[in-house]
Image (cartoon, rainbow, N blue to C red; front, side, top):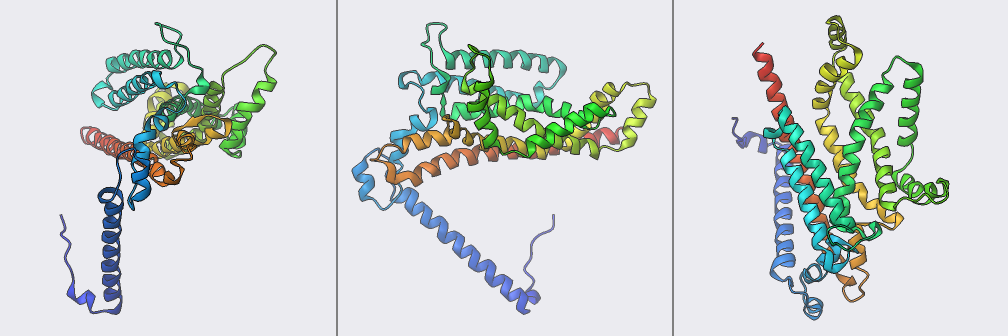
Amino acid sequence: MKRFSLNPEALRTPAGAASAAFTFAALIALLWGVWRFIDWGVINAVFQPDYEACHASDGACWGFVAEKWRMIIFGRFPYEEQWRPAVGTAVIVLMLVLTAVPKFWSRRGVRVLGAAWVAAFAVFFSLMYGGVFGLSPVDPDSWGGLPLTVILTLIGMTLSSPLGILLAIGRRSKLPLVRTLSTAYIELVRGVPLITVLFVAAFIFPILLPMGFETSTFWRVATAIVLFQAAYMAETVRGGLQAVPAAQMSAAESLGLSRFQCYVHVLLPQALVAIIPAFVNSLLSTFMDTSLVTVVSMYDLLGSLRLALGDPEWREFFGVGYLFVGAIYFASSLMMSAYSQWLEKRMKTGRENSGSGL
């Protein structure tokens, strides 16, 4: 490993001296900013839900979070029943962690994970909806906070991925009708903002339904996110397919594989590995974009914070609330990004070892 060393000769030039001065000034500014934040956010902060103490303090009022954290995390879900979304979300997060472990990626492990995911979704929606096992019913309009953000992100990415793959293949199809329809859908959806799609799904689509046929806002919004994200996923997958040399398809067809088998066994495995960074970018985008559901009167994590800020007594401490929610978004995004980098490196190492063994 090459060690960093300071070159005295470089400091004697005007450019080198200016660069060193700028670096030193930036370091001092960073240390000053960190100290100011610690002084404000820790040393002089108020951690108890005491409004008078917060008002008299010059530091952060984490007491607002201590007072309102349940509304921020769970939204309008009935207070006495908030253990239900807590358990349901914990089950979903546990399944996400287990799915990320390579040990479970064997053929048998995938079957076990598939069955476990079905059970996890059954547990989550049973707890959220209620009406079974003695649980009181809760309308989906009362769902909110972190559980709503997690489940909308999971549904959006899980269902949009296979749909996006089909659209990407359709756009590359030799059949003019399939290619035209796929291209038209992708370009149409990508040309419309997500907020418009959500508005149409929540308020316009119910008008078009037959009389007596109703669906909850949650499922209409979830479907809108899936259909919207599928168009972007299609372009991501198409980019991965274009990165695979065309000779791969020709070689696979020369071995007698059908076009379907060529995609499943040759092209898609390579393309999906190549798009891991772009896929994670789409995942993070979906995770953040769930905050737009507030336009249709659904309250995700950020929307639930706005509900908590409706209390005029604590409204002046909104900055601390946004820092708390921002920390949740940042920690979640950082973990997903770090995992994607590890996975990309692992896949690359696996391909290199496989190639060296041929």
